[in-house]
Image (tube, rainbow, N blue to C red; front, side, top):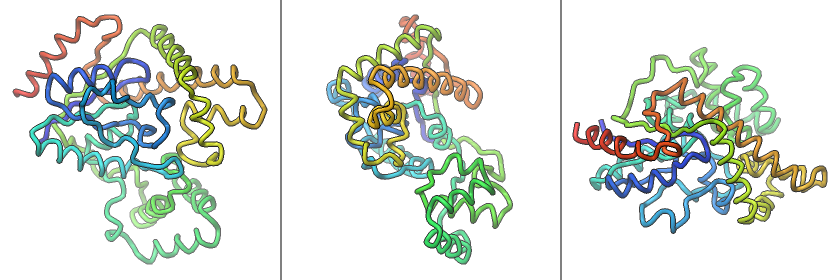
Length: 305
C-alpha cells in the first residue's frame, strides 16, 4: 500500500505550520483535506495557506472551484487519490492536511461513494432526471430526504447527479448509498496525526483567529457571496453568518460573535469525529512543542518500516 501522511484536527490548532515543517523534513507534497479551501477567492475565511507560509511546498486541491459550484465527497475522493498516485510516482510523500473528517475517512478507506454511472440503471436515472426537470432540484432532493435522510444530509440539493445516484442505489439495492455492503478496508498505509490542545486554549486561539480574519478583510470577502446565498460556499462558517448583516438584521459585532461561536462548536465536532471514527497519534504541540522530535522519530520509523 502507498504511504500517506495525514495531519487532522480542529480549526486553529496549528495544522498548516506543522504540515509545512514535516513536508520539508520528509519531502512531502500537500493535498488539502478541507471542504472550503477548494473555492477561489475565499482565502481569509478558510485560512488558506499563503505563498509565504507554503515556503515552496506544493499544495493541491486548493482554488479548484468557483464559489457558485458544488463539491462532493466522491469528487474529493477521486481527485485526492489521483494526486496521491502522482506524488508517489515522483518519489515524494503525499500528505493530507485538513479538518474535514468525512473527506479524510472516505479517502483512506475503500468506501464506494456511488460507483461509475454506467454501473447503474439507466431507466431509473432517466425517471428521476425527468422528475427533476418537471419539479426542480429541490423537489428531487426532498424525495431523497423522505426516503434516505442520511444521504440527503450529505448531498447538496443542487447536486442533481448525486441525488439521482443515491435514489437509484436505494431503489436497486434497498440500502443507503452511505451504507457499504462490506466493512470498508484501509486503502493506504497511513500515519494519522491528530492535533489537539486544552479546550479553553483552543477556543482562545479560535477567537483570536476570527479577530485576525476581520482585520484582514473578511467582510469584503464574504460580500462576494451576497448573490449566491444558496451556494455550498455560502453555507461555510465565516460566510453564512454575514447574511443577516447584509439584510440589516444584525450588526457587525453580532456577526463576529456568531462566527466565533460557530467555529468553536465546529472544532468540538471535529475532535469528536476523529476520536470516535479514527485512531490518530494525538499530539499537543501548542502546550508541548517538545513532542515534535518524538513525532518526527515515529514518522521516520513508519517510513522505513
